[in-house]
Amino acid sequence: MPENALDQERLTWMLTQMTRIRELEERVKRTFEEHPGVIRGHTHLADGAEASIVGSIAALRPDDQVLATYRCHGYPLALGTDPKAIVAEIYGRETGLCKGYGGSMHLTDVGRGFLGTSGIVGQGIPHAAGAAWAAQIRGQGQVVLSFFGDGASKQGAFHETLNIASLWKLPIVFVMENNSYNVYTRVEQEDANAAAGEALAVKAKAYSMPGVTIDGGDPVEVYEHVSAAVERARSGEGPTLVESRVYRLSAHGNIIAPPGVPLHFPEHEAITTFGNVEEYEAAKRGDPVPRFRARLVNDGTLTAEEADAIAEAARQEMDEAVAFGLESPFPAPEKAVENVYA
Image 1 (cartoon, rainbow, N blue to C red):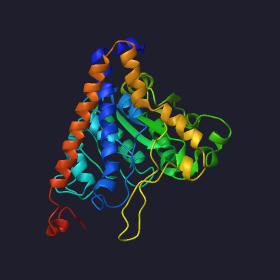
Image 2 (cartoon, helix red, strand yellow):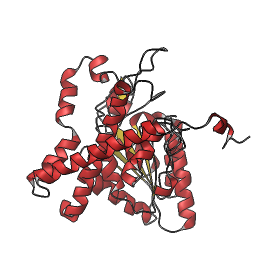
Image 3 (tube, rainbow, N blue to C red):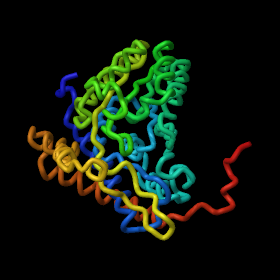
Image 4 (cartoon, helix red, strand yellow):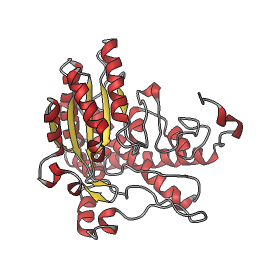
């Protein structure tokens, strides 16, 4: 689909959602320093992947569904979830999406079509296929997006699910967000395709489905390719594997420190593990949020003042979300036995 098929309203929506996601992730990261002890356990940020998230979700209908990995804050936000409920859940508060029981890695908003996430690498992939099978049975043309990282493509669940999805022509699109690192390991150190210089999307060939590798830092390119894959799935032709190449700008996750030592985010693994400051600085220069802002201002889609207003509105919105989360109560201890089944 040519770029001019996206009108000014849709392009502005893309920049707005990307900016909101970035502001949310920045607030989450800052919480570790500004409010020590508020966030417990592991937290993983998707700064650097905003264009991939937003460009993909822009291709959906309101009744389509999404499942994601544990790096999951941006997906429900782009789908329309209230950021106050997201932040409250990350803070473990009763007003959160899952009443404070799920935390950062287990966000769910079924009413918005966001069916959930998991801290287990690759677990959401077969769940997404189940949702796609249900959609196929309903016969209403719904499509499911399954988001996961490059590391999940080494899991058996990935291969088994792609096989059955292709065999049954399920209405699903697999979006592999390849951020070049699996925790402290570079992708070419763990994947024969990457080491040989092949795109990871080549894995689609084994399961008789199309595979495409795209610039995940360009929301328009993401939209074009994911839209084509969504329409293919919606028409009954089956799944597609989209490898969306992104670069996460934060470390894999926060440090889990000994008691009494605040949790925090370290520097990116390119610096701490490989000593490659040049790689990281190049990634920062290609940051998709300012890159897309400059593109829209330069081509006249937005004025600089309009783009600044989008950024300021996002900052205010996320400030309010943080305040709401901090002011919200924790779940009552006696509620710990609710929603538990044997």
